[in-house]
Amino acid sequence: MSVSISAVSLPCLEFSVSSAYQSFGAPENYLHSGSGRRVLLRGGPVHFCRRFCGLKQWIVENLHQQKHKHKLGPTSEFKSIKNQVKDHLQEDSNDETTKVTSQLEESSLPSFEPHVSVDVSTTYVESSSMPQTRSSKFPIECGEVPTLCIAIIGATGELARGKIFPALFALYYSGFLPENVSIFGYSRKDITDEDLRSMIASNLTCRVEHQQNCGDKTDVFLSRTYYINGGYDNREGMSKLNVLMKKFEGKSEANRIFYLSVPQEALINVACSVADNAQSLKGWNRIIIEKPFGFDVLSSHRLTQSLLSKFQEKQIYRIDHLLGRNLIENLTVLRFANLVFEPLWNRTYIRNIQVILSEDLGVQAGRYFDGYGIIRDIVHSHILQTIALLAMEPPISLDGEDIRNEKAKLLRSVRKLEPSDVILGQYKARDGDKVDAYMNSLTPTYFAAAMYIDNARWDGVPFLIKTGMGLIKHRVEIHIQFRHVPGNLYRERMGHNIDLATNELILRDTPDEAILVRVNNKIPGLGLQLDSPELNLLYKDKYNVEMPDSYEQLLLDVVDGDNHLFLRSDELAAAWNILAPVLNEIDNKNIAPELYELGGRGPVGAYYLWAKHGVPWAED
Image 1 (cartoon, rainbow, N blue to C red):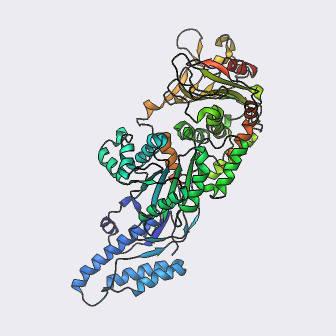
Image 2: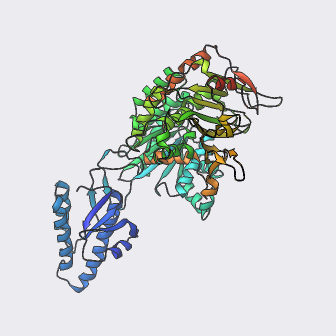
Image 3: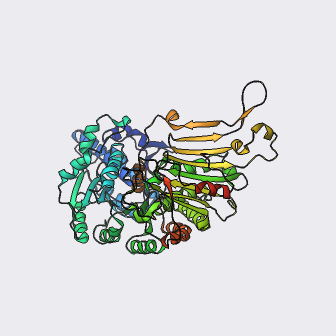
């Protein structure tokens, strides 16, 4: 039987369909009457199976009622229903149709059993927003739905306890995870299920709009969380994890996600152990890997080859939590859904683009930061991915692979960074500060650079990057500065600094997420005086919602199979090639970072950099 995932059609039978579906609790909005007296059942094969089983149950109940009235075999009403279904199915007959119709022919009233087995062979959509197709032929038993198991490898670590488990809980109570989800924590510590639950319980909180029954939701979520002591042999540990997962998986499709929250030196061993011993054989498997993705071009290539020897590219999700921010998600919407911006998005109208990410005193470098520095930690993934989304050509669709194709093309067009166009810095601690306890003398905590994209759209437009830690304030902003108006009639009215009168689009994530547009305007009153105010879309005023954590967004994307915010292998390699000249100079100790005061504005050299390229920093 061929089943379309977007819609399943059956002939409209001569009985009350709504009452039939109410009998098994299906929402009425999944049932649509089309033209030609056909009923359209919206949803996937699982939804169809549920509804078909409920329909069959309703038929059985009515036939039993008729049985008391007529004890002479199948009623004429059931024959009519059976014949209508049979006639309709024969319109598009094939081998699967014959199987279903033969089941209808063989059924009789006294021995009628409420059991249906439907074989589905179809191309289905893993994600409603970012479709991916694959061939699937899993038997779907009535009442059974695909199961989802999520394993957090390194479950007792700080990242897992503080971010991953809370994000999964938020998705669970918001209804974005299936009710039958099972979550497994895996590490080397000798603890029990209850120990893990106690460890993560204090970090599980509900947002304001979900406060009702929050305690009950927490209890249910924790009851679905289990622990595996993997020991020091990951292959044996993953085999144990596989056995435990199978206990919670039914006969239907079984899907698995593995989040590898492990140190870089253990990544390949853990990933290979997962591939060989813990993958599902009757569903999809996806593996999430945390940054940094290697140390340089060579180590990243080796890591990629090791992963691709065990997994397909579409299974690998390289996660950077900074890419889960709403600002990043909104970049393509702003560009491609607004006619006012896309025609201006080129070298003819844009003077420069600035990407600013500064962390204040509240954010300190972690232990792994030493040796990697801010270039490998933030610039390589977050900054370059932001520029790719900002500057790429329009993709042919919103499919994740189509977007990643355009990002990869853009990154290959970025000119390799010259050391003369880069400013490195490192904060120096004051007396009593311990923020640099894990830093060596050459680990940069500040990076400023001017980048150029060698293609027709962006030729000659500087992309200025500034990112650092221990600065005066926490800011995440993108500034798109437009060119001056040619032959501006009001030039004399704009004062001495013409740059202050330049139109500018500002996309702000922190503080106070907003979209700002700077325009030139006449000040009300007598005379002619001009001002450059900002048209302001402040999210907290416009949208009365609590913003989800970036890990929630990215984990939901993994569940849905939406990979457009995750780095593909060719994107990864292109990014390393851009940064390779600077990293080589640092490794050869030819560049020393400039010291700057903790809590200051950063190295003085950054101001000489913008002067060299004729572009003032937007914040100044």
